[in-house]
Amino acid sequence: MIKLGIFDSGLGGLTVYKTLRESIPCADILYLGDTARVPYGTKSAATVTRYAIEIVRYLVDREVEAVVVACNTASAYAMDTLRKTARVPVFGVVFPGARAAVKATRNGIVGVVGTRGTVASGAYQRAIEKLSPTIKVHASPCPLFVPLVEEGWLEDEITHQVAQRYLEPLIAEKVDTLVLGCTHYPLLKNVISKIMGDDVVLIDSAEETGFKVKDYLACEDRLRERKPGGDQFEVTDSPSRFAEVGRIFLNRSLENVSQVNVTEGDEVDGSDL
Amino acid sequence: MIKLGIFDSGLGGLTVYKTLRESIPCADILYLGDTARVPYGTKSAATVTRYAIEIVRYLVDREVEAVVVACNTASAYAMDTLRKTARVPVFGVVFPGARAAVKATRNGIVGVVGTRGTVASGAYQRAIEKLSPTIKVHASPCPLFVPLVEEGWLEDEITHQVAQRYLEPLIAEKVDTLVLGCTHYPLLKNVISKIMGDDVVLIDSAEETGFKVKDYLACEDRLRERKPGGDQFEVTDSPSRFAEVGRIFLNRSLENVSQVNVTEGDEVDGSDL
Image (cartoon, rainbow over all chains, first blue to last red; front, side):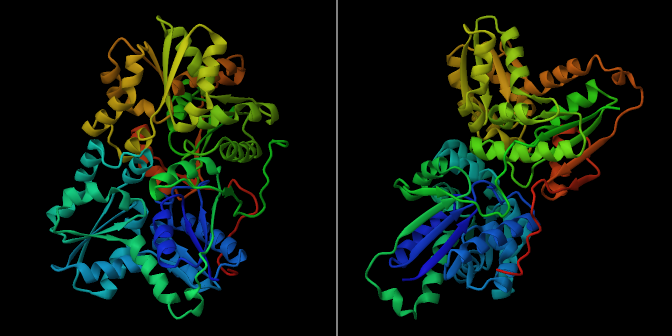
């Protein structure tokens, strides 16, 4: 049995979980959503990196054999630090997404949408340039996409208008490939695709990452096990809203979500204020 | 000289700061924005209360003589705990807002808008009922208002449509008074007022709280000092975005914002993952 850890700032990583669950049915998967500190997309590199380190430490202590950083912002800011220091392999979502975009583009003009943090970090831009220096990359932050998804307004007229405003500059740049650089965005695929048009290829970093982790594990005999692996969902805030909104991502109810503590030296009470 | 502490999950409390600064010019004000864990509005009562306790402890250690909980969600969830345990007076925004609404309503039907957490807590509903049991209260969460304000889309057509959708049920209930139960919402006053109509009184909890703290301090001789007090702005994440978006709230640039740590046992590094 292989035990994999996935983490995200909150719910979005469930899109990565879904691909991993489908492509590696025999793996035990431990999913950690940092819902007490979500979102990461508006926070600084230093803070996001600190949170990511705390969580990877927690997952390694729980004996996972590899960690998937499902959060684009954490991948964008913290991958170098995590890779250098963790005792297990760490996979991010940025590189697989970048590689798929390089393969997909025909005119050499790629768009990237993501949180403020992901776009500001320049991580996708750098990864694409490393793979193919001649490709032009245009990136746009879309801060309202996450709250719109969490509101459940997936095919809404208002969402359409917001998306149009964010995407127009990318259409003007004639991108023929668009990286959905945030795990919430695949839920807006229909709206985004309507605006970008059929000729623009949408890259789902979550999907690409699932494939990459499977590739990495391909030589493991244990992958051939027939017994399906188990799921554990853990969050740092109360499980109820995670379970509720998780339904938007997985089309099924999430049971047995438990609350855990990933920081040290806690147990705050108000007795000595 | 009187030293006051104000805290909020992030930037929104600057609306409360503004009123306090204007009404008590001689006070030293220490503002703490918990930007490393913002927002509170989507988080659970237990988590928000834990954060509020940590911050009040931090402010009391910094020798403030009173604490103003500028965040509606923290006021809604944590006031009882904070009041019972803190060594200094603690003021929330919920009660002043509720009292102003009770005074303002003519038909006895009051609306409340706020975050998911504030509305779910029922804090405004209980406070209004306590003051006047015959008043009917209708509350609506407006989760997209905060991201719209932080995007700077204050008088935008999209914001107008979002507000219309959130407010229509309150119009149908014929509310004649609407409590803006989140410190970000006064920045949408123009849009909200256009939709609700001129006959609906908008209650700004931030303003009301400023008046209440001034009332409380009114008997203090020190209030008559002529020398203007100083401001300190502190945040738990990087100061740059706080300073930038703070401009939307204060119409002036924020200087000397510093980053602090309000939790104990920190200093995370990646050396032992």
